[in-house]
Amino acid sequence: MRTETLSPRYALDHLAPLGRVGVITLATDFNLEQDLRRIYPSGVEMFTSRVRNYNPLTIENLRIMAPGISAAADAILPGTLLDVVIYACTSGTVAIGSERVTELVHAVRPGVIVTNPVTAALAAFTELNSKRISILTPYTQAVNEDVVRAFSNSGCEVLNIAGFGFEDDTAMTFISLRDIEEAAIQACDPDSDLLFISCTALRSAQLVERIERQLGKPVITSNQLLAWHSLRLLQYSGAVSGYGHLLSCHLSPKPDCNHFAAHTPPLEISS
Image: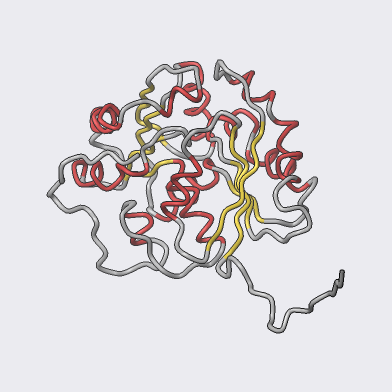
C-alpha cells in the first residue's frame, strides 16, 4: 500500500470572517442558541459551551454555578482566538455580578472581551437615552427583587417589574408567545422609556417588533441585547432587521430611523 502526505494548494479559508463569539449558556437552556443563530448576520459565528446550573432558580442556586464558568469558557475552541465571550444568563449575572463573571472568564481566556445581559442592557439604556424602565421576567418575586436592586444600583429608575413566578429554567422557555406578548403590554408603565424583557430562556426576541408597535417605544430582550452588544463589540457596521429598533437603528445609526409603525400583523409562531 502506498501512502502520501498532501499539502494544500491554496490558502486556508478564514471561517467566521466577521467574528467568533464564544457563548456560555446554561445546561438547561432551550432557546438562546436558536435566537442568536436567527439574529447574527452571515460571517459572525457562535460557538457554545454549557455551564451546570440548578433548579429551582433562586439567587443562591444561581451563585452555585460561578465556579463552572471558567471551565465552560476554557472548553470553547481551545487554542482558537475568540473575539467576544458571552455569559448568557441574566439572573445569573445579577447573582454573581458582572465583574466577577468577567474575572472567571479571564482566568482561562485572558484579555478577551466579555459581555452578559446586564452589561448589554446598561449599554443599551445609554445608547437609547433611557433612564426609566419597566421590566418583565419569568422569575419569582424574590429573584425580581435582586434584579431591581442590580439595575437601581447602576443608576436606573425601575418604575415596575412583573414576573411569571417560574422556578424551572427549562419550563420558562415553554411560556407561550401570546402570554409573553400580553404580559409585556400589561407590564409596561406608560411613563417608562422602554420595556426590558429579561431572561435568555424566554422566546421574546421574535416578539420585539410586535410589542414595539403596540407600545410605541423600544423593547429590549436578553438575547436581542446579547446579539446587539456582541455585534457592537465586533464593530459590525450593518443593521439587522426583524428584531426591533435597537438592532435596526443602533448598529449603524440612521438619523430618521423609526421602527414604531402602527400596524401590528397577526402573531406567527415559529418553531
